[in-house]
Amino acid sequence: MRRKLVVGNWKMNGSLAVNAALLEALTTAVGTPAAASAVCVPAPYLGQCQAALTGSTIGWGAQDVSSHGGGAYTGEVAATMLVDFACTYVIVGHSERRAMHGESSELVAAKAQAALSAGLTPIVCVGETLAEREAGQTFAVVGEQLGAVLALLSEAEAARIVLAYEPVWAIGTGQTATAAMAQEVHAQLRAQLTQKQAGGVQILYGGSMKPDNARELMAQTDIDGGLIGGASLKAGDFLAIIGAAS
Ligand code: 13P
Image 1: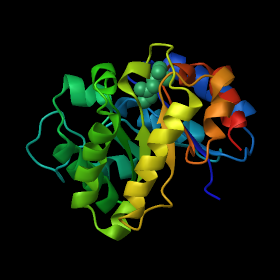
Image 2: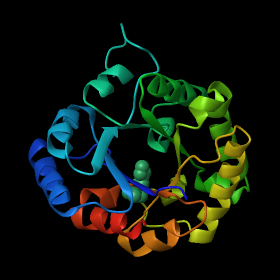
Image 3: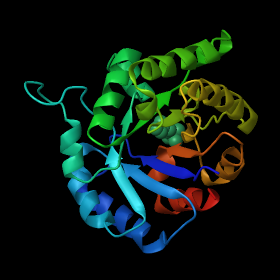
Image 4: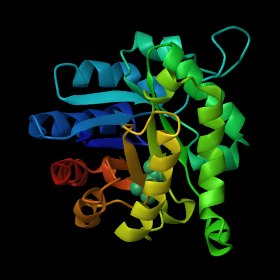
């Protein structure tokens, strides 16, 4: 059985003081749960997370990475820099970056490969908009997004990613995909991964996952955990979701 994984995506939230309180609350109470867990934080706070989380069961990572190895790319952060802060994970292709920063599936694929080359685990995000779902294009959209990544990666690389299905209409809206709706998409993503000999990859669900719906979502055959936005900023809620994953 695949181990469950719960990852918090803090997005562009936090401050040194606010993070210190959240990290303290998390490390005090998390213990050794059945599920793996991590937080993906704004890059300036990676050092703070490294200091606070080393020795705990909670890992950490970033929310984006450059596809380039280094050089004249003002504002970008290289994968090797994330490794300097002992990151395990980096999110790539979040829908907010695809929509607001024009990231193509090909760029997301290159970022995933840059992360893998540095020894990081990329959490590759895919998901359809409401208009795409209503037009019956869900499978075509997520299939294209994952397909571009699988086209670039070798089989060995593909087996090392984490995939996250995040329907755009469910992010930050309080509107969650039903467990059955999410499972249907996860099963198709699993089939696509299997064609690349990567069927064992963890597939997370993201989009308004909260303590009250986490257990049912993560009980689905192909849902191996969660990528949590808003609820990851509240220690009690994030810990409850980690506890619901077993
Ligand atoms: P919410 O949990 O706030 O809906 O955000 C989900 C998300 O985008 C995680 O990456």
